[in-house]
Length: 228
Image 1 (cartoon, rainbow, N blue to C red):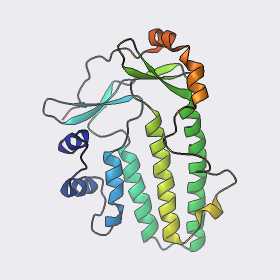
Image 2 (cartoon, rainbow, N blue to C red):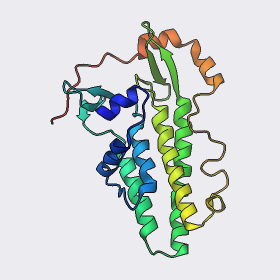
Image 3 (tube, one colour):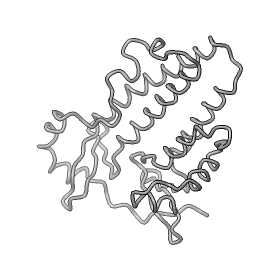
C-alpha cells in the first residue's frame, strides 16, 4: 500500500521497496539483479478492463472484478511477471544447445506474432466516450460491452513484455531474432500504446449520445474485499 501511495504521488518505489517486491515475485535479487526491471514493470502494470483498484480501511490495496464479482489481494497480471522471470532465468541457466535455444526463440516469436494480431484488433475495437457527468468510459463495438477501465494499455503492455523478453533472450543467446521473424512478424509497424485511428473515432463520434444512454457501465455495487 505504501508503494502504491508513492506511485499515486508520481514517485518511483524506493530501492528497498523494489527489492522487497522483487523477492515477493521470487526474483533472485543477488544473481539476477539485472532483472529487477520485471518488478518495476509489475508495480506499474495496467489493469484489464474488468478490474478496478481499491483500498480497504487499513489502506491495503485490493482488486475487484466487476464481471465475476471476485476480489483479490494480488494484481490480476502478477502471474505474467512471475512467468517472465522464470522463463528468462531458466533460459539463461540451462545448458541447451544453440539449436534448441533458436527453436525456443522461434516459438516465442510466433506467440508474439499471434498476440500482436489480437492486440491490433482489440485496440481498434475499443473507443473512448464520456457519460453525462463527464466520466470517461470505453465501449467495444464488436462485443457490445463497456468498461470504466481503458483495456488497451493492459493489452499493449502484455505484448510489450513478451517482445522485451524475446529481445533479452536473443541478446543472451547471440541470435538475431529478426532473422527468425516471419514476414510481417511481431513488432512490424506496431507502436505499443496506439489508440483507435482518427477515422474510427470520427465514425463513432455521432453515436456518442446513444452510447451514453445504452452502454455506460452501470454503477458498481459495493465491492467485496477479499478475505485477509
